[in-house]
Each structure stands twice: as structure tokens, then as C-alpha cells.
Image (cartoon, rainbow, N blue to C red; front, side, top):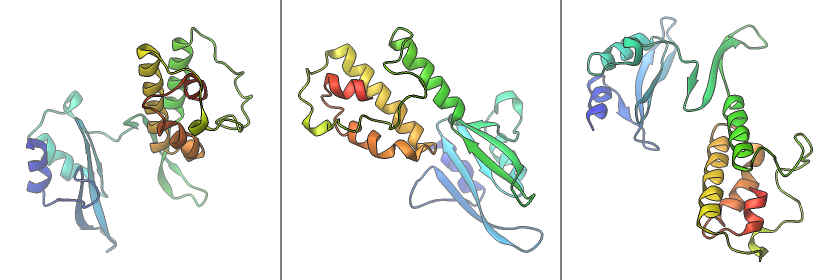
Length: 189
């Protein structure tokens, strides 16, 4: 609630869809009207604006920033951010979940003792095409495997949030069976 007071003081209002996304009407020097955004997630704050310094200064007046300064982001909530020209030469921000996905794969390899149950690059689909989660009758997982399965589903959900929509359907199917998952579900996860 203390953080919420700062965007309010800066004439921002929370969006209807997400109270941690703050909006403020603005106009660029060329006359283009747009909406500035302040995105808050626990202690991560990102300002999306033509002039982000004004908002960042307002936040810094109340809170101590990491390194005592606001700077252009290179990562936000696991997503790599980069400013580069598009095909028409216009500078645009891009985002990539690549580092998160690589780290997630490394964590899975560690959990499984260094070996994945498949060869890298050899999976034609995110989940076996003959696996039907609702019809899985394999053994229920013990408490440790249950925690592992739910943790991995959380990693997959965040990976989808960051833009890997190609695994959304399979992740949704497996996520719907996370209480209590079975051995077959964990293998697919």
C-alpha cells in the first residue's frame, strides 16, 4: 500500500485488469497521445514512457533504488529485454524468455540427476500425442514427487506467461491435473 501511494501521487491510476499496472495519459513532443505505464511486481518496478525519468525520480524520492539509480532494463521478471531496430530501422523493445527457459532446463536436469528422459531437440511435440492426462491411471505421486511436479508446472506456466505460447495447451492440460498428479503426469511435465 505504501508503494501504491507513489503512482497515485504521480497522477497514475491502477488499471481495471491489474491493480499493479498503473496508467497515466501523456503526450509526446510530436503531439502523439499515449498512455504511460508503471508496472509493479513486489520490488520490481518498470516505467514505460517516452520520458521514464520523471516517474523514476518520483519513485526514487520515496524508495531507495538498487544501485541508487534507475536505468534502462535489460531483464524484468525473468524476461530478457533489449532495444534494437526492427526491419524498418525503427528502435523497438524486444523480449525473450530464452535465458529463463535455459535455466529451467538446467534445473530439471539437476532434479533428474543430470539426464533428461529424452534427447534434446528430439521431441516433435511438447507432450506425447498418445498421452491423455484425464485418463492417466498410473500411480499417484508421493509428497516429494508431488512437490517436484507442481514446481515444474509453475515453471511451465511462467514460461507461457513470458511468451512461449507453443506449449500453452499442453501446460494447461497438465496443470489441471496438479492435485493430485500421477506418475504419468510427472513424466509428461
